[in-house]
Image (cartoon, rainbow, N blue to C red; front, side, top):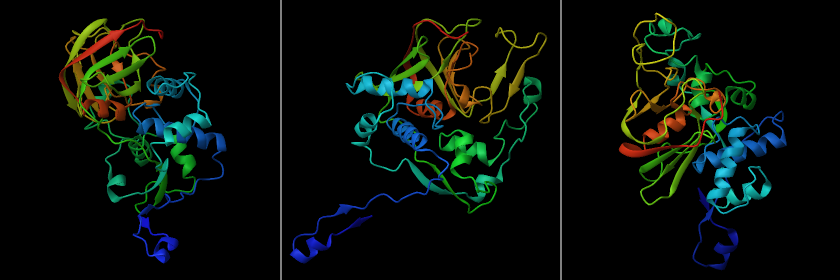
Length: 320
């Protein structure tokens, strides 16, 4: 929306379109000034494709890593700290509000949902889909948010009622600006970086990479295929984890599938880059050797990479 200044009209000059100020979104008083600053920083980083992982209004390791990556890429002093100067630097090219209103639709509450997801693989395989637990989980993931923050921003909301107006984060578009030609998996920093053909850093994501029991591979591999909405096959003849005696199982596609909503298969057999049913644990809990991202980061990367792109593993795992 644009408006024309009265002074310009009175002067009889050619009207100059001036961008209207972004709408003011009401945020509950319980959200502290520090939380508001951190949310702003997380959203700006998310939109710049320096993912902080789950947006939660907290100053955690994934946020500090995202800040450091942004600072390094933009020639700023690298300290990993959110500051007014950092936000000013990011906001120079991004003046959009960090939050927006969203109205719950009929589709948002239609399901199907699985209120209590089984943890046992055999029970999980019986489901038609390892779906979201309900509208809260679904909406939190759509807007890259922690469920606790979503509820805190909307303390009186009925998340099961179409027409309810929510305050949510205004996060990044799904696809990167150009195709990914090379991916770095940094086992020491627990991070994934995506580069264009000209070497430009396109995105940086927090990740969970391997474990002491089943470390991620080393060396250079490649993307073999990308599977949106993958099923998950547990085959004890090919894998080294799981309960003894557990037979071959196939878990149907769904956001709470063990590999989440996207599977990027590598030329290293049984290994891939994929999503996760619990984005809060990215960078915190060990994986079974693969590279785990939030569902939205895995989706964004998967939508921007094709078979043949190089995948380089570097560093040494620091989490057991």
